[in-house]
Length: 161
Length: 207
Image 1: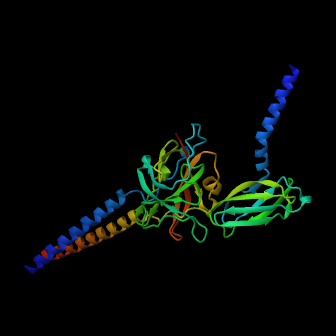
Image 2 (image 1 turned 120 degrees about the vertical axis):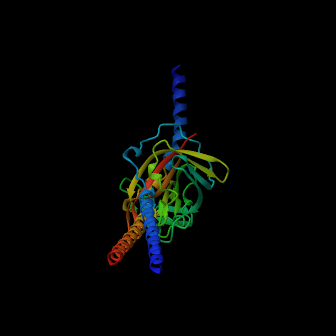
Image 3 (image 1 turned 90 degrees about the vertical axis):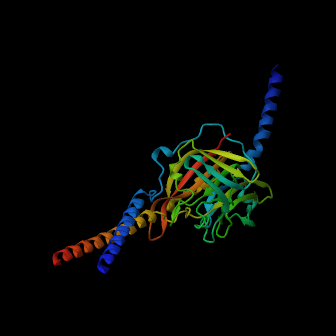
């Protein structure tokens, strides 16, 4: 009975390990921040790479790009990092695939290059009512002035008569 | 006799001008408010608890319908301009909204972005009433593959343009299909001919 329990536990452990391993490997490469306006800088980090094995290589692929970026610094939390300047990048989502200095795969991550700032989505239509009020006021004012002139003329004519 | 004719003509002109002037003033006073509605405090919303809608493959959106604010508009693809800012549909087509093509399509996993003008110099445009939307309101997107994706509004917010919430709008989002509707809001600066804020509507696909 004990042997059976041990076997089942071992089988479960191996199964879970197999399931979780790819996820852990994927998590070894990160991009921070994962969303940047075009022209911003992102930091690529391969956590699983040993700096003693040589530079890590980050392959960046996306809408108009397929370039390699070499790591430049040791990451604070372990692994290797590189900065990537996104000036000139086409808007969209990019994939980063990292390879350690010893040739081992270090996982993938994605980041998104977005437009800068907000959306210029207005033309200022509030002038409409203001324009109507101004034009109406001017016309009504002219009419009042005309009416005053007419009344005065009529009074003068009546006095002369 | 000539004097009488001239006087009658002048009286008629004054009457016409007066009537037209008063009519214009009344029209101006009763016209649609010049400034677009802003989202209220109750529109911020929180996390949605309902079951998510299906995640679909990519397909370009063709049409957007928002019954709560009577929006029924064609969608055209937009991207970024050479300066890196978000492209919007041309001002001479104020009834059309733009789908941000570099992002995901509505129904795919991630945030699909749709942008539309709030107004033009001539008056309200397609997303003038976006700030009126409330959590739970429905947005329907018709795609080129014939499917119609229904989204429920999660919340509406106003954000200063100098601090645009890039990650909230374009970010990867969750595993489900989400939608972001963007237009202008806040104060209109006559000198720069631009609004101070962007109105952002967050919505999630529903079954």
